[in-house]
Length: 65
Image 1: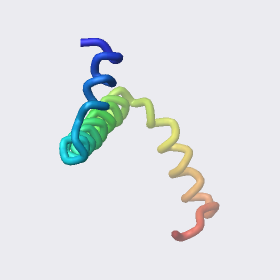
Image 2 (image 1 turned 180 degrees about the vertical axis):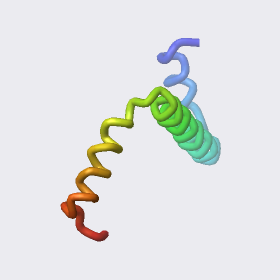
Image 3 (image 1 turned 45 degrees about the vertical axis):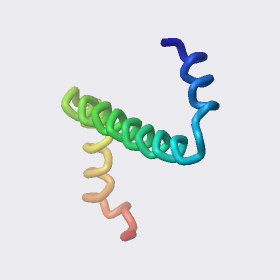
Image 4 (image 1 turned 60 degrees about the vertical axis):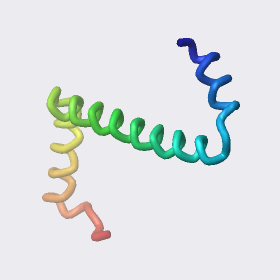
């Protein structure tokens, strides 16, 4: 199924169906985001940023939230 076919199908949904689909899609997208972040963490892509943040904190250059 192509993106165009999916778009066309979505335009034919009733208001109730669209709400259900929207809720499902939001949850699906959030799950995909979580999986990507977890993969990035496991791959060490945030290690340097974490070390910089720790150094800033230790140097007293952080403000409480």
